[in-house]
Image 1 (spheres, rainbow, N blue to C red):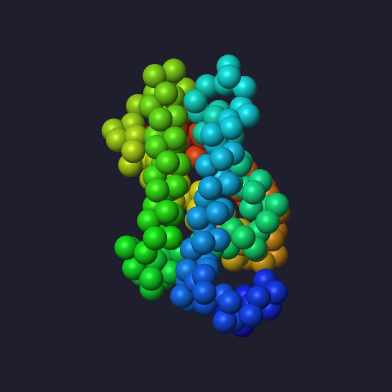
Image 2 (image 1 turned 45 degrees about the horizontal axis):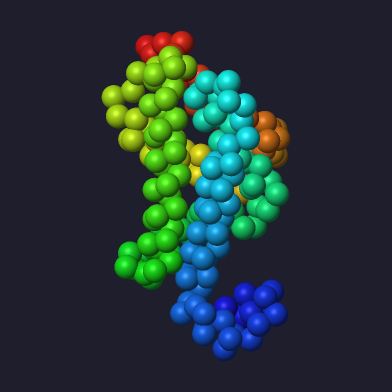
Length: 182
């Protein structure tokens, strides 16, 4: 809390007026980050003539673009679960996070269904479950780039941007109607 107070130019006492603990602060950062992602998804600057699969890739790129613009803000991911456990699921900020995450998941589910219909995405048994899987994967990939930067760049000799591009490409090919499982 002292570090946060120093960075925000507020006293520790003032911080406690707005937040009960550091977990609430981290969750507030999380909800604001998720709102940015949702806002970008709702604007949808991808061309109208694009297939749903390409729009999904576009949204994956939104995550990485926002991460590279402000990587510190998007490092809420490693502590998200612990913060929720600490403050409880009934906390107002947790409920707001859940609401925004559900809106993002609904948008991804919609695009999966649209992709199945426009034949850019292979048939899926449960698009909502696939949407949850995709969002978990994207969050984990972004977290990996942030927390394992040295492993990726020094150990594997891969630029983090290339790592994300390869990962999103793998997801794209898996979802593609042309994907053949073995």
